[in-house]
Image (cartoon, rainbow, N blue to C red; front, top):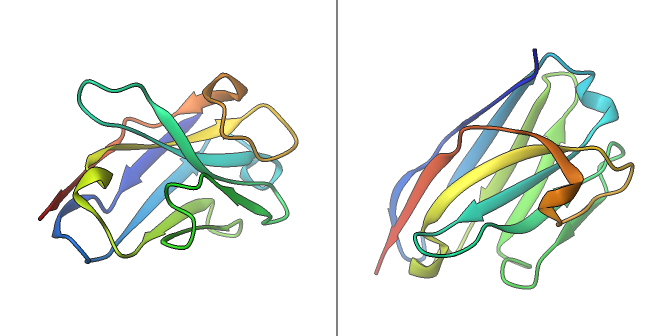
Length: 123
C-alpha cells in the first residue's frame, strides 16, 4: 500500500520560511518522479514544483526563485523549502508520485497523493 505523508506546514508571517517534508512508503521511491501541488480555498489545484528520479527539478513561475524541491532517496523523503513566503501562498500543500519518467506539473500525471499539510501566510 502506497502512502505519502506530508508534514511541516503551519502559520508564518509574510517573508518567512517553512520546510515541508513528504515521507513515502510502499513504492520504490527512487524510481518515481515526485511533485508538490497546492490548493487554496475556492481555487483549483496547481502544480508548482516537480523533481525526477535523478534530482532534476522544474518549477512554475509563481514559485521560481523562492521555493526549492529536493529529495533524499535513502530516506524515501521529498522536501520543499519555501522562502520569502507571501499571503497568496496560503493553501493546502500536497505531495504526489508521478507515473511519468520525467518531471511534470500536470496533476493528471500523478497517481499517488498525500493527505496534505496546511500552510497559512499572514501579512
